[in-house]
Amino acid sequence: MKLALICCILLWMAPLSARVSEEPFAKLADDPRCLRGLAWIDRNSSWVTDQQVRLTEIPAPEFGEARRGAALKELFAASGLEVHIDKTGNVIGERAGASGKKVILVAAHLDTVFPADADVRVKRDGPRLLAPGISDNGAGLSPLVGLARALAESQVSTDKTIIFAGDVGEEGEGNLRGIRALVDAYGSRLAAVIAVDGPSSDHITTQGIASRRIEVSVVGPGGHSWSDFGTPNPITAISRGIVRFSSILVPADPRSAYNFGVIEGGTSVNSIPSRAAVKVDLRSEDERELVRLEAALREAMQGGINDEISATHADRDLLPLNFRSLGTRPAGKLADDSPLLATVRSADRYLGNVSRLEKSSTDANLPLSLGIPAVAIGGGGRGGGSHTPEEWYDPSGRELGLKRLLLVVVSLAGAER
Image 1 (cartoon, rainbow, N blue to C red):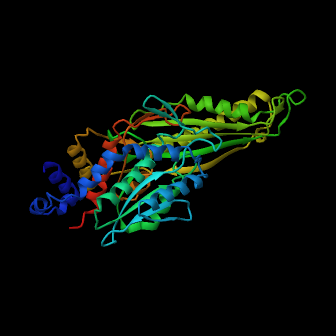
Image 2 (image 1 turned 120 degrees about the vertical axis):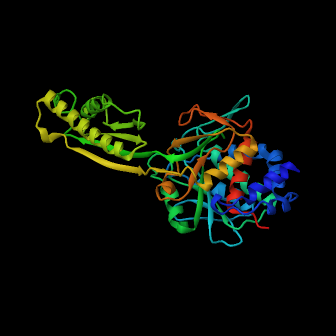
Image 3 (image 1 turned 180 degrees about the vertical axis):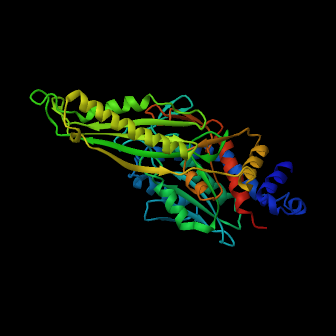
């Protein structure tokens, strides 16, 4: 009886500023709908893990998510959702609400950081599942499928429409193109956005970290390693710039970071390259610090070119510098008194889950930057080795994450009487 009462309170919880009296909660104490959904999770968490394995074993590099998206579309349709794929490549499943005026968007990104030829076959090591992308974001995608099935089993009707989305372009140079398209499509109808990203149930991401991704390139005349020795080398110039930039002070407050992730250039070991490029990721809690970091990067790279020119006694115009934006992520923060945050915390209290507030860079960045209530949470279980070939996931305790997601989404969507 107590379980049903608390569950239904969560189902009916309105925004704090418009909470109704306690009387309707008592009338719903024996309502079995929520309990059916929670019971389905207890019985079928291993099935959700099976779907995670299935999706993980379909390569989904940035700009190459279509095959994984097609598999997700089938799973959404089998759960009774109205499904389509938009022109951006997002897989969208709709569970219509009674009014349809407002939307709760639950999204998880389809793409991974790994190339199309990566070995994504899932291996087992005791309770652990090992594969590139098994946690980021197999652990986010599969809970969407589990949530859709649990809601179908519960037969809960909601006032708001629930949109399930496997979105593209979250990783690498995707520039959040998937979530941008979703926010554009639903616009003012969005009541809340929940990004399910990775495993773990011990955090609530309420602040988006700003980032800029930049390609820095240098071109030169090139030549033969012997006969043209002394010609300025774009790879050496960029290397000098990297060393210069790496010596600058990066503040701990606001927390900031940078990464030189990819270096390209040259055609053979005995040829002076005619071009070199490096891709850089700059991040900060404060967008003003990003401006400073980018300016410092430009200065350091130009300094590297100057050093190379000086070392080779070449003409200063032989190594032009070019900066190209690969993407930007805006910052944003959920208000501490947000009804969305209160709902997640209420679900955590009910489930006995201890969680903390976090700052990160996720799909939630985009809606937060526009003032749309949004959080990023994990799908449950544990994981590690993200963005490495040694990535792993342990489904132990994943039921907690699935139940948390169910309670939060239905609470926000408003169960019909």
